Image (tube, rainbow, N blue to C red; front, top):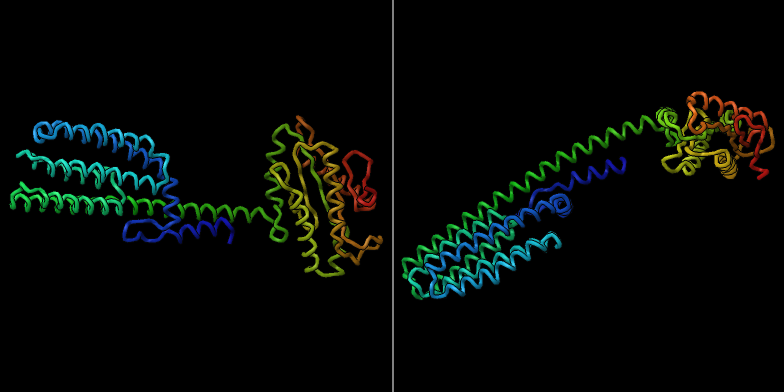
Length: 404
């Protein structure tokens, strides 16, 4: 299994059911925060702006319902809650996802405590009518923001406890009114929390569904690319095969950039197979291919197994000096492997290669087939001149690894 395929498989396995608090698995949660964090910040900011505006609208009702403490009500809302909320909205994108949600929860609880305090403090006969604000605040936190489900549970429980305490502690309330307020409070808590659960569950399940579909598509694409790569890869050496080489050269020879093409042949390879057998021949090809792969790094250098014991290496933007240096390095690197070759009659005793080099000039229209033919001709010149060397096309200079 390829690394990418294994990664996609791991991601699919990480899509686990939500826990009781509607939380993702850690891997999915990290991914969700990375993908959706920006949108969450924008949504929270907009909700905070709306909430602040509505929250301050109750300053108008305080004039009618809370005349005895109206300035306290206005002061707490305008001078405390409003600037704190706006500061939170401005800075909320600077915090981590967990810290961000915790701050929103804390700010909402504090904002809720103020009207509860005013409800308990006022002695006005109409002050009890401010009770309706509590239900709207619950709906705002659990449905408009909305808080994450576990935070919604915390907020709702805190609101229920604090408001119940205020109802019980307010001495001027009649028993029937206490009962009515208690029922209204419980109903608002259950209603808003259930709505939050449904909203949050749908959000999480929709994301998991989209993520699962995306990962399946990515896995299919990875499998397609893997199959495509296999069709362009020599299975023995792991190098690109001739198909990929032809595709790459078609692109290279369509522009004006110069290039050098090296045709490489393992010397006396048939004798090597005859003496040591094809398994040893395959091992030899793998070792030679590994050397070529190590040297052919970067987007402007490609090495492919052309067929049999022949390889092709092409490099872009290379002049004669750079191509000669590369060819010499190839010859020396293969000889330094010291792979025993008992079938040779020339006394060398190890596997070597011969290299022919041809060039695609800068700005000149030439075909890949013509340059390949030039490189092949130079290769056979290297063979005739004794092997274990390289020859540049149309030049008589010959360089042996042993003479460097």
